[in-house]
Length: 179
Image (cartoon, rainbow, N blue to C red; front, side):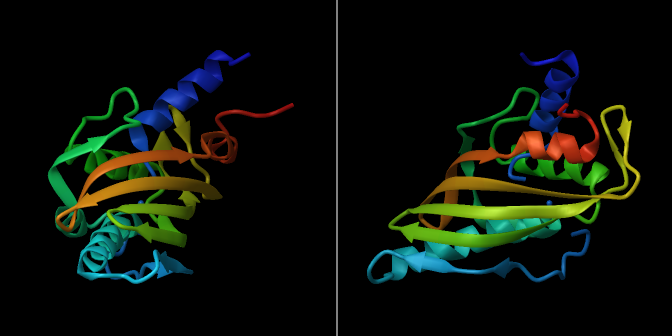
């Protein structure tokens, strides 16, 4: 059974995150592994470039990377309630989550590129020093995983389906406890 606290926490995460955001635009994006379908062609190289910009945005919050990555007709197929659809959605999510976790970073653990689709497994990390809804952080570390499926057309991310471990995040934020 989902408690009212858990429901409120999940709603707050839905508004604040997507995949999810360090504070410095100069922080390098760490990618552990990239796997291409048999032989990457020109289209796959532009697909990889778009994905790299998209995750560089999530790593730093730098909207210049988001503009390089995302198509004007971007669609988030797992859009949480309260978040705008389109290119404004990721910017909204990043700003709101970075208010709670200003040093948020992403490490791409695996990026699999197959034609115009990219599957990415990543880890978000940071310290909860801000506020998340009515919960105030005390500097505790947060770390949670997420997975995206992107569609890239003509070198721009047009579609995203994503899932993140919100229960782990809510526990680390101190919003829910498992007894």
